[in-house]
Image (cartoon, rainbow, N blue to C red; front, top):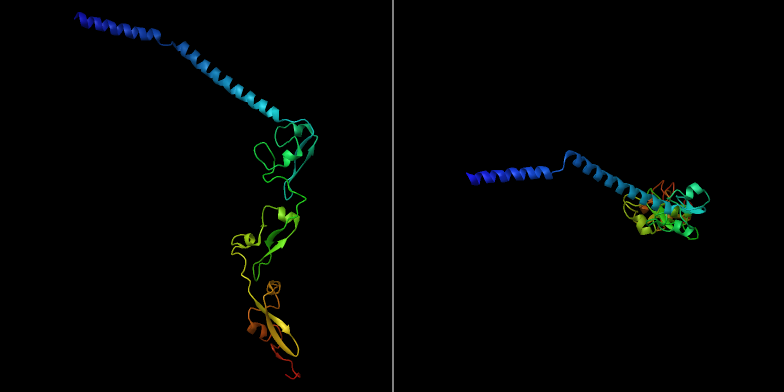
Length: 225
């Protein structure tokens, strides 16, 4: 009995000690407020650091800013204090503004257009009856980001300039003599074969009446063979 009573008293004492050591409601509230204050202070410090970094990016006039985007990519000088000091898309030099974009360097992903370059590219040529590509040195066309390719092979691949790619070069037949006989001849000149008139896919079509000649191929009347 004495042992049981002693154990009971020990348990009661432990419980009382825990109650004495536990934080009071007021202490809990104060601890929560202190935690909130620390979080607010950390957020304020991060914001101040961000503001300082942003301020470091602000420039005094003059500065260089993007002035055109398409089809010519360029940068130009600005003396507007508000533009130079806005903290973005303003650069301390022309070279930095025109560099290929990486991080805080450069504005255009591909850099400024090299206006001194001589460019050639390939674009869709004919669509019917054949699909072809043709070369051009039009500066504006070769600088656009669509509808132009660096090589004929790239332009002619399926899905590029034409959904099925370029047509395979095929010969054609055209009128090649009118006197003393009307005849058709074969050519592989694609400029002629794709011009859309006076070219036929076979000699029979070319020589048929109403083809290359209204009366078809044959000896001209009144002329001896």
